[in-house]
Image (cartoon, rainbow, N blue to C red):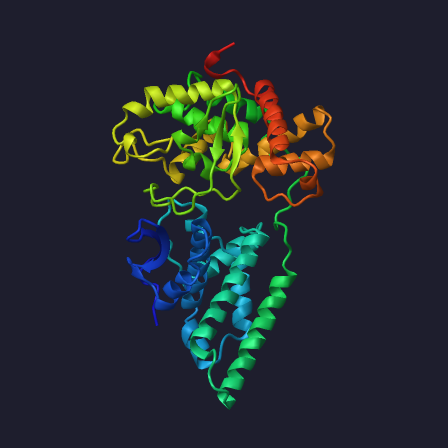
Length: 425
């Protein structure tokens, strides 16, 4: 039986083919052969999904070890978990946040029985620290892992009295855990005011000023142009942070007076050497940007990227400009820190997805101003966000028509809501 005297964490490694994969380790060594085998069985998942599974699996592993429960032994013996033990895990899932997953810069989290108890006590007297989605996914991971262990130890065995009892216990576990999962609300446990802006307008305009390279309110001493461009792309287009990380010089298109970049889906990109490789969750599409933004991107390439050591070794647009990683593709943590610094400068807890929500608000307002009906707005939004198109509008508008309309709205949005870049008039 493993203990938690050592630190348990999720580490990212690369295999012989250069493909990143997560592993649950304790003091640098794999925690348990079954944890490794379970993750290996999910090899067809996208990297970010697999990483999320690893953190959920680490959470349940640490919890049950802290309670002195060996899940593998329990399933192998056919005893599984009691209602009380399942309920204890359910309570922990609601009230304890995995800080390592919430903040990637924290590499190691050690859970002990006391830490779990203290966390439950502290958060049960305040707002829950995890969303209903996170809670449900933690239950799903326990359900899936127990099923995996059951298959490993008992599937396709000859039927005996012991096998019948084991199957009955397994079915009871599945019935109970599934009943809890099915009752879980799909929305977040923290209610959001539908009329509350993702970013209040006064803060938003302060942010638009702070990100400008030449603004006296810009909090950075270096890498100002790069940081402005990354922020501007997130603000102007509503793409996810993974798209900014994934953006390559060869994805830029500047012809026919319609500057844009291609948002690609290339899982397991062997040219991506980052520990946490870039990933695009949405479908591939073309993203329109303003001519001024394209000019600034070209200026960055010519005056910064092209003269930085090591940058010529890859095609990714945004790079680290100093330190041991100089010239290498910028990391997920680095972009988050840039936005956090901008947010701190205007007293706002800023993160990339908040900008995506703000983009949606502005897009909605501009589309309404142009007289688009609600169903058309939703169809345009799905295209612009890269979501799977499943509305009735799919049979009416093809992708070219959608792309043209989205470009028109985005252009007007950027011209009207964002100040001229670099002080241009």
